[in-house]
Image (tube, rainbow, N blue to C red; front, top):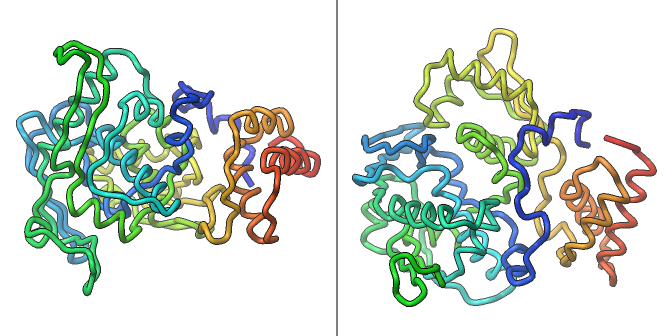
Length: 356
């Protein structure tokens, strides 16, 4: 159950697109997915300022070296493009559709998916993100394939040397530099693509894109990877700092984590830090979805969420959706009218439990 914490959503960015756009309904239906290796290790910079220094991380025999271009290392905000790509490809895989490394899309769909504005500066920022993703070189011994794989590996992956995006193309109206962007096309690296094909992915909460600070996003990723469906997970503060890749002192990081614990607005997990400030504990809110085979997978319309908010005022309708899907899966129920069934579930939930 979501704990009684009135600040849970007050510290998040506003939901800029509460009504799903009719023309991007298929995109919006895709569940947020991220590559597990990129959640476990600090691939991305946590600053919006250009960082051109080479960085290396080592942990338990795994090592990662990030070599930025002159425009700086890819940031955790640039990563939104890859989360979008991973989510769309996984959505197709789950529907039995053919997939490939190249993905063409309307950037407006991406901006809505990642909860950004759709003004001129947002499209400019999108292109700048492509520059950094293509310019950042990753050297690592972390692999995303299995021995005996039937997916051929490139020489680049064998050497552990790759770009996050191998190629990108942006088409503007009338071929003008300042024209409206019509579509964009990206080719994912073999390393990223193999991770998707091997389903080395985890589902993210939609409110991930509403977290205001880079360090909050990174801490959430780590909690999602290591706590997962467990009731709780404890980690040393110094080890957690290393995993984030943040360039701050342990003293400063301790203050950041105490503040995060006090505000208690991280999706899926609560955060607590012991009195000495040496250990951090993540506890599940119960909103992490169960494996797909244990859940009802039918789609819901945007109107269903509005009706659910009226049926269960004060509750997070995405949390209730997860509970409903898990309950249907457990009881082996396949509702003929999913919208109505979901709203009745929410009404019953509220009648039993009242306000959160």
